[in-house]
Length: 221
Ligand SMILES: Nc1ncnc2c1ncn2[C@@H]1O[C@H](COP(=O)(O)OP(=O)(O)O)[C@@H](O)[C@H]1O
Ligand SMILES: [Mg+2]
Image 1 (spheres, rainbow, N blue to C red):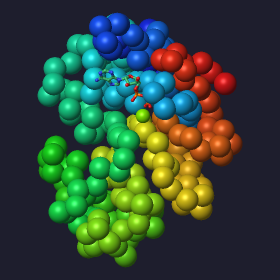
Image 2: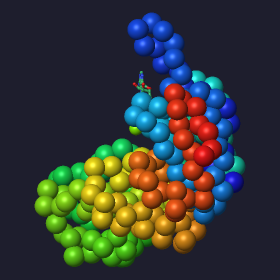
Image 3: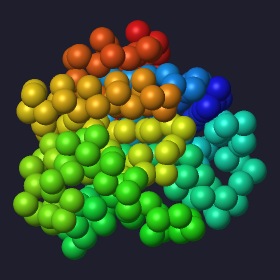
């Protein structure tokens, strides 16, 4: 297993009442698996992904990635993991407007410097997502689908074992959505596991497993 989550619970207070945004969720993802989660807005999907990516500490339960528990790691170790072994595409595309497309893809390397020069790799990822000709453009001249593809290329820069994506096809037209779903299927076929939250009805035809989230609870479909 690349990722194992056991009995995750995340509680918040709302109007002085305690509620569970994520309620007793267990999930295991194997190497190269494609797992999708669907569910209504507010059902706890993003909260769960934030916990699985090590950005948010659960109220109870544990997460381990490649056999290491998040609970036993310090901030430095967690951020190293997030910048190297785990790619996280958060809701919205999070592309920085003052950087070119290429510079945006290179960001993980800038945050977490390694000795090698990743420029060739970034350009080849841009080629894979069909954006090579736009490498020196600024985000303001890109379409919504192109911006999503920039964030996908960026999440892949460090060759993660697992890519987590929160609604990467949100707000996109049908054609762009199937393009992006195809892109994820290609990533999976090269051995990277993918965990994706999506509203896309075609997701079931790509995914190895589908889950639905309802009021914080996850169930297999
Ligand atoms: N930091 C927070 N404090 C209080 N409530 C929160 C917080 N984050 C999320 N929630 C609540 O938890 C529930 C699940 O949110 P979220 O995980 O964003 O849902 P989804 O991604 O499925 O739309 C929502 O009711 C939301 O309002
Ligand atoms: Mg969400």
